Image (cartoon, rainbow, N blue to C red; front, side):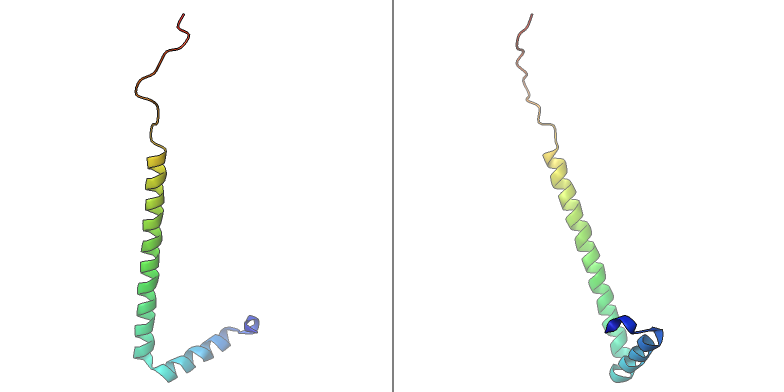
Length: 73
């Protein structure tokens, strides 16, 4: 059903939304959407950093402090 909405259809929908809600309301709504996208990106970046920190902690040097020499000739 939504496959055949062309540029003119999208323009018509945009005009109807602006007429119904007003320019100020649509503008503030888009500002809130922008803030939400920014917060989402920040959360993804923080999650990625946390995962990298965890993998770096797991990949630290795990060799024993004292090595026991076996079969010394």
